[in-house]
Image (cartoon, rainbow, N blue to C red; front, side, top):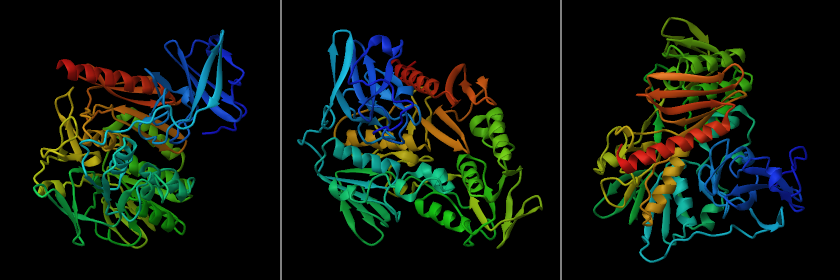
Length: 516
């Protein structure tokens, strides 16, 4: 990605730098012509790649080097410093690479290399002939993209009951909903990508059954698709509460691009919005609608926003932030009814509302797997390689539940990056890789001008420590269980969040190898 910023262009790397210019750091940002280039020290080598993450343009010079990879500080995408390949989502596009020479004490960056330094491929022998992916979300897309990237040449079919091609779902409750990101940013790939990659993408195609014996799936319109390998990436669906009036046209849930698009259209003429739910989606929706100028009220049965997810101190800080931007909270209350222009709260109060968004959580879409006998327990049960109890059938994303080596408990995590990386692992295992999914969960959340990076998984904890100052937006909140740190939430400490992710991953992998 080219950079035209002159203030942070750094040294002209085509003229060369010395190791002293790194000032004791591993990474150095500079430029070759008008292109931003990152130099990275890996042992005795110095490697050169593009300086900006191909996901959202994050500054990789502020990231972290681990082995011969670099990790983005914003959303934790991982790139090979040798090939430029995007090894870990949410980035999919490779970084450009440059040739580096040593001229005495100087390191000089020469010409840009064509493509990546190495193009990974899969051997044709033994490949499955037909792979079917059920679902058009994060896991399904990541699986299809990785299959083609790894050289899979067989028939590849994606069946999605959505009306839109795979899109950047996190943006639907963030910048797109707020009106600061145009819709052309939302698709994960341009329209022509699927045809170019020979991916048969069937939209508005609801799968109604899986025949594990005949190895085929059927759709509601009677079509059948044979498979040698199958990925279930059916995701989760929004919980719809039995609230009187919830079926009216000004009442929405937020899960798909169509949902977000409809809320945006309604918001153009609306003045008063009520959001039910004080989780991440509810609060991000409240912030986005407030940025559009609507009066926003949040209604929740919880005592504090995000209390069960982030704890009372950080949850209280986020509430104060929202209140400072004009959001009004009604905690410990519920919606008793929805009328055309107002809502009735369980406590008896009435609020003006010409737009209502219900963010009461999601539930995994497990009906297909259950009917097929794949093993379901609050999600589709998979092993460490993301395979179900039926060989050749995998599950990934919000619907998948796998066993955590450290706790011994099964977990299902509704994070975008987790879904994408599970799709990538499942793809490679379909081709015989036998990889263990052991990534540390990560997600990010935006609230007005506040960014939070969350690493690890903490369904419960017995101690919380805050290092730094929330008010100064310089803090690392750590969550402990049985004396072990299991998760962190970082504000203004992006590199520290990356280091924590590396530490948690290393500990969990060591535990899995030794059993304790």
